[in-house]
Amino acid sequence: SAKGGYVRSHRFIAVNTALPYLRGDRKTIRRIETFLQDEKLRIDIPALRREDGTVEYLPGAGASGVRPGERFQVDVTVRNLGVGHTFPGGTNDSNEGWIEFTVSGASAGNVIMRSGALGDDGHVDPAAHFYKALLVDRDGQGIHQRNAQDIFAPVYVRVVGPGTADVAHYSVQIPLDYTGEAVRVTARLLWRKFDRKYTEFAYRANPAGFRPFAEVPNLPVTEIARHEIVLPVAARSAAQETTTSPAPPWMRHNDYGIALLLQGDTRGAMAAFEEVARLAPERVDGPRNMARVALQ
Image (cartoon, rainbow, N blue to C red):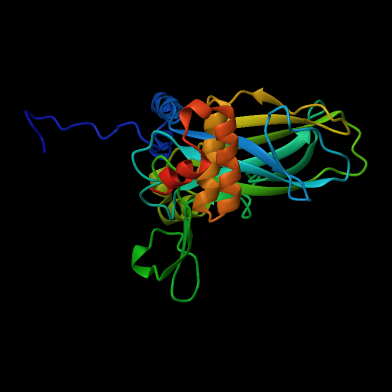
């Protein structure tokens, strides 16, 4: 409450880039983006899985190139480092975090595949790996207007708990006629305070509240974190990082093991923890103990 005629500012730095954008406050948006990018979350591309089930940890010396026509799986982990609650938290029926995953020519930049692209209409690819909640009413219709009284059931709620990790799996196939020397695999963790459906609803319900905008505004999308790996094509040379992960290799594979464990892939998690024990034996008592600690 007011003290001495003053109240505390509610323009605190968190994740709401929408309201400062609507009032033209670019300075606050920059402060929020700096806050989000300051060791709050990390994204990594820790492993590649061949069709025969072989796992190659990236970018390590044991990870080799790919062949034209080859199909393989790329795993991407998101780690909650410095958020004191789940990422995201709060009104997750209208929040929108997601992974944009792209495979492109390393030199020409031509896109081979992409998941999580932002379309010209302002909507995110519906097949993206989202961090949000999809809720429905009794008729199975999505809750997109913050109409909490109509919520009947969640279709999914995907969040990353404090100190834990999540993993997304992407199936990739290099075109048979691919002639480039390498492909670039890019994973970006993106954030938008309100999804497009809610923004459209809010604009149409109260256009007077959006006076500076002649149409539905394109709310800012923040890149929280990014990681890239370059894979040689038709060559048995090692994969390389192009944007270095801020975490040492053992920590990246530890994140991977935690994420796999939380998904129920105990064998995959054990293999990842064994890789951690190999890379940093002085830090662990063994992969089985790491699994026990992660479960706690």
